Each structure stands twice: as structure tokens, then as C-alpha cells.
Image (cartoon, rainbow, N blue to C red; front, side, top):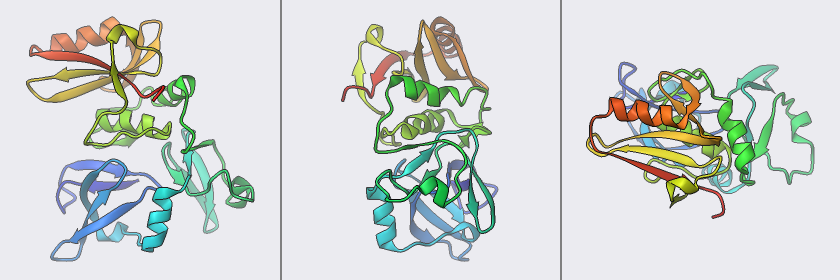
Length: 245
């Protein structure tokens, strides 16, 4: 994971983390040349990384990585053989080999784990399967892994692994009547006063996956009551779906 900070300092707040295979652009460099300000194209989040963490690639390679299909790691822990040893990868990590390659990429790079083609959008069942792998992931501001997960970044990561687009500037999918929601759809609890959103994925049978101090499954009523009781301000409940678009 590549930590991205709000300011060019390790004492600054962690904005996000980039996973293996994710690409970013360099926008600026600090005066002491120890930090780079970057922009992550997929999430549209920017911040600062240490110069020691910079990995440069050619512009054409960058454009190819953005435009071509790739494999997304789905297993809790995966590994590839890298420079004679194992490099362990977390869910959401990217391997830039498509299903159209003429060789068996898994055998070629010594891949252990499970992955899926990003070009193929997950159906409801697969999306829920991806989401449930994050049960018990602890809350961590800026975190994007099973070892620490930011609420907004975590739910965005789940849908991204499933092949859907969710970036900082816009919520995914379309709005639908709350009582029309189906498994895999997204519930959003808008705190109008604080301008904060809280998320849950509907699992069916009145159950949702959501985050308190960790990712957990509970009854829909419990989630709604918890947020309502802890947010004595104006709130709006919304349902969205990425399916059937």
C-alpha cells in the first residue's frame, strides 16, 4: 500500500492508500524534493507521497494501464512471485493482464489467489461476496484494506473491485425508491447539517453491511436507529443501484 498524505509530512493526515498496480499522476514536487503531490485518476483524490515511494513509468504505459482491461485481486490475501520472492497483495490490487492474453498469465507470473476481470461488471451475488470479505475490517481514516478501512473509501473500493465507477466527485448508480432496493444496492444516510454520508450495502432479508468501529452485518432497523440516535440533525435516507444501467 502507498500512503497518500494531506500535506508533505508523515505527521499529516492520511487521505487514502493506493494499492498495488493502481496508477497516479505527479502534479508537483516539494521544495526539498522529498515529496510529490499526486492525483489518483480512478478515485479523483489527490495528496502527497514520499519521494522514496515514487515509481515512474512511461506516459504510454500509463495510458495503456488506464484504457485496457486488467485483473483485480479478490481474495483476502494473494501473492505473485516478484524478483525471486513472494509479493503479497490485498483485495483491489491490480494485475495488468487481461483475459485476452495468449498465455496463462497466472502461471506465467506465479499468481496465488483469486482475481476477476475489471471489464466484467459483477452481478448482485458477486458484489455481495466481495463486500462480505471486509467483515471485521477495523475503521481507519484513509484506509483501503482489510487491516484498516475508511468508510467512504471502503465502500467505494468494494464497488470498484466489482467493476463499477465510484469517485470522490459523485456517487455511483441511479437513485431508486428505498422500498425498491434489492441485494447489492447501496443505502446512503445523508447528514445534511454536517454534510457527511454514511453507507450500507443491502444484503437482502432486511440485513445490511455497514461500518461502526468495524465492518459488520446487522438488521436494517439497527443501522437506521443507530445513525438516527447519534445524529440529532436533519438526515435524508437514499437508495442507489449500479445494476441495470
